View 1 (tube, one colour):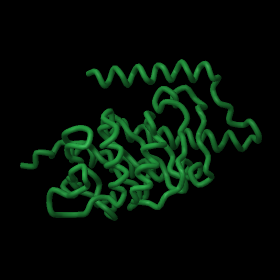
View 2 (view 1 turned 30 degrees about the vertical axis):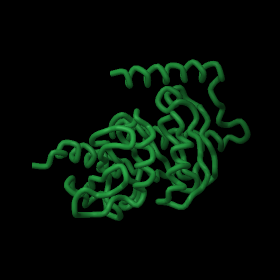
View 3 (view 1 turned 60 degrees about the vertical axis):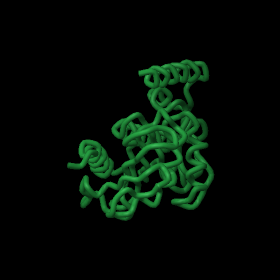
View 4 (view 1 turned 90 degrees about the vertical axis):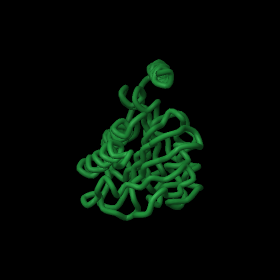
Length: 224
């Protein structure tokens, strides 16, 4: 019996939901879940490369160590494995990473636009603005480093001319972060259509207060 059967089922369901919500196309995006260990030790479950979500089976998800080496024969891990590995190695608070190519968030990424803190939910769930990193070629260590640096201690970031990376303590929360970024991007793009000043950020003192609440939530989760 597969010792990771329940984790395979969970990540597989998340991948199906990611596809159903239109956050990815058949082959785009990827997701991962930490199986064991922390920091630079342990194992990771990750989506396979170039395999459509509508045909994906739980047993086709790939187990790798945190150097990216598969533990068993089968499909190869996602080409974006370096991005997932870097985040899992450096963010002990993260157990799952989801990378999506949703339309409006990709529009912001292509335009090179950070999404400012425009609604309260954004600061409380993500940590403040959705920052955007510099461009790097997909699947490279350079992109992985940029993603980690752009995230900082927040839960989401935009990758220039690419898409979204979202993180969380489990794959469902990482998925919801990516879904939230897509909705925020829609609000931002539509508000900007009103002209200069169309997307008005929250008052700075509110952002500061909500960032404190975000940090308190993270500290409480780490202490459990």
